[in-house]
Image 1 (cartoon, rainbow, N blue to C red):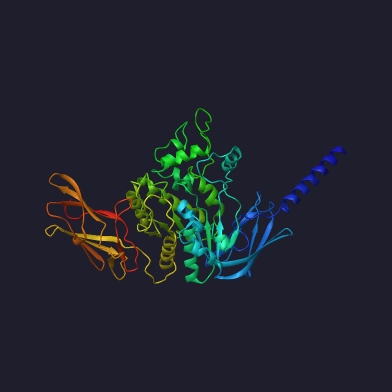
Image 2 (image 1 turned 120 degrees about the horizontal axis):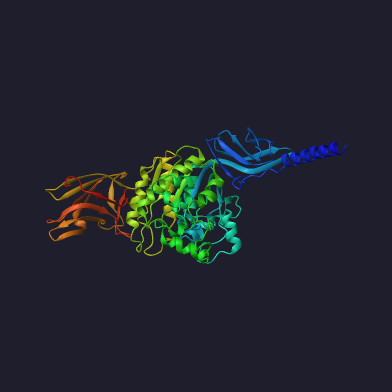
Amino acid sequence: MLRFAKRLFCFLFTGLAFSACALAQIKLPDIFSDHMVLQRGMPIPVWGVAGGGASLKLSLGGYLATARAGQSGNWRATLPSMQAGGPFELTIVSEGQTIRLTDVYIGEVWLCSGQSNMEWPLEKCASGPEEIPQAGNPLLRFFQMKKKHPLNDTPFSDSQLAAFSKGEFFHPAKWERSTPETAAPFSGVAYFFGKALQDSLKMAVGLILNAVGGSPAQSWISQAALAGHPQLEFLANLPPGKNWLALEGIHPWLAVRARENWDNRERGEGVMALPGHPFAPSYLYDNAIRPIAPYAIRGAAWYQGESNATHPGSYFAMMQAMLDCWRGLWGEGGFPFLFVQLPAIGNRSLWPEFREAQARCLSLPNTGMVVSIDEGHPTNVHPREKKGIGQRLAGLALARIYGRDIPAESPMLATMECSWENRQATLFFSNTYEGLEAGEGRAPEGFVFQGYIKEGTAETILPPEKITIEKNMVKLTWPDGFLPVVVKYAWAPAPASNIVNSAGLPMAPFRELLPGNN
């Protein structure tokens, strides 16, 4: 009798436990909320957590999908692709529970990521006071992942360190319609980018913002991608007794700021073992990218590089690894990736080389670059002029992805010929449209020859009379007694350069070996 009672109790307990598990509440990631924008023309993945084994039914605009939660409760469903429109209601039903997300639109979705210049809020932009009062736009929508603690030079508390080490770095987020109140703290670059897209496409545009000021590229790359790249594996496979602060390949400021945040706490044999910092390799991949994937997106807009500019030689590898792991995570193929080349600044000695490394990233599939050498500030790494950057990103997207016949790309050096007898180099450029010209009503400037004179190496800055512009070409004449090796344009942290195409877009900086005399 006692044995039977034990069996009955175990049976009832197991049944109750199963029922409680099956009736567990449906939980969705933050990225699914009222007012969200879902990507048109692509299958729409939806995922979350429910009771183990629970069945789920989803409906959106007359389309249906089903899913069953696994033992752990995780589930994923895929709704079919839809055309732009709305508002719709997404309904999820499971085991007697119903979730309804309202005011859902189908349109275009972009991820806007990077560091502080992408994070920089509209209210701090030069054009913010004029723009914010007219920011009401129900078809422009924001999903902003806001960090819980500013990453300035103040120490984190023990509770913050514990939270960050568990990946709890962002506040809970939700989709919001653009209003003066929601636009003011949102990214200025992303706002102007999205506004221009919405104005042109005449459909809902959703912007996902997860930029983090100061963050280096390696924090946005998965551990596996870092470990699998021969140029980056040092960031993932740390030497015994070392952490990422001791690595030579990181910007020195990152280590200084992390130590300030950690208040120079020492753990173990003088080694800090605190992974909970957004500047650590892979931290933002794990906590800012993985939580939102595979939410369907059209592409990504990226403004980053200031925290990698001391090591330009590794940046191409960073972008190659980052794009591979992001695109693999989303599973959408090689989605578009548009990025901003760093603007002018007067006190960063390696920025010319870093801009060159950024331009090299154009060799990666489906990428586009906004040239911003005509923007910037002499000493401030956070220039307040963000409207032009956002609009250039939008122009690039409209031309490259949406098929608009508009001039949207900066002139780029294509080929070069030399006449050594005439001491002349002829440079041919792409993306000139109706032709090149010297902007700002000034004589042309910005070209430099590097080479040799009888006494040794020398550089010569070409005066305007030695620069001739003809449609898609520029002819440069070097002085007698000078043997040029390299021609440079806008090759300085804050260069004096003013060549633009007919759309007013600035020529991209470059340096190039002269052909025919090597």
